Image (tube, rainbow, N blue to C red; front, side):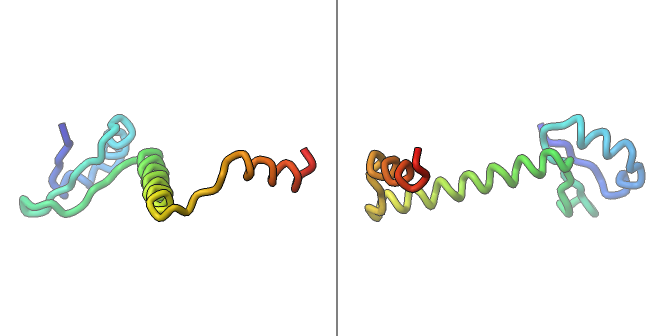
Length: 86
């Protein structure tokens, strides 16, 4: 269940920091009863950005497959072995 707090609760920065680190979900901040901001720990932010990067790379790879832009695996490995003398 998402955590929702009013903006006035941001005055207690230590408690907010603890809540961010204790939760695996972002905390939604409201202003005058409406959504205003989202806060989360740096660790969770980095994880979200990493997964966003992974998803975007997967989408690009799927597009390449659809367009037929693929390489033969054996030929690619052979080329790398020759290039690096492995």
